[in-house]
Length: 110
Length: 113
Image 1: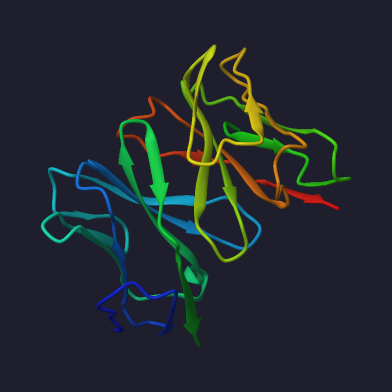
Image 2 (image 1 turned 135 degrees about the vertical axis):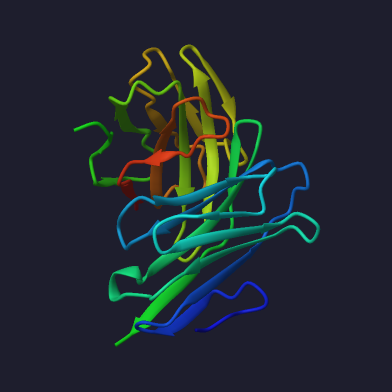
């Protein structure tokens, strides 16, 4: 699979490979984090979330990792499929405010 | 089906006119939000409401106004004071607003000429 060490705006991945999308968050007081997927012309869809008292959480084909020491969040997608092509956003929450990162556009190659 | 309805999907206005974007939810959520998205960028928070008859400014509230008279509804008015109103507007709701994900509508694309 492909991995990126720092946040990049685009990621191209071969179908069937694993994808890793990275996100650096800014506020050390953030206590809740969410990954969203957005397809063109639609609203963001919830993928997975994690609270600050955890460092890993798994869902169906997705895993989120949280490193509070370096304020880093990542989303791993296993066996990437064409339907995974979209823009992925991380979001951090403090109190009621949810702030979004710039997004990573994932393109799946057949 | 439960969800968030934003209408219309596309909206066109002349410069200088106020315009109101509709957002309705039937999820019985307490918290509601408005975000703005510009091409190739992330979402920026305009206003949010934790409960009926209460709302707070987000990061880019200037030129916008909201009301929350009913739990189900959170309309956004884009006023003529908003310098660059053309954008994709997204409404969201959340059960409690804290430690629970936001559910988004499919947005309204506003074009002001």
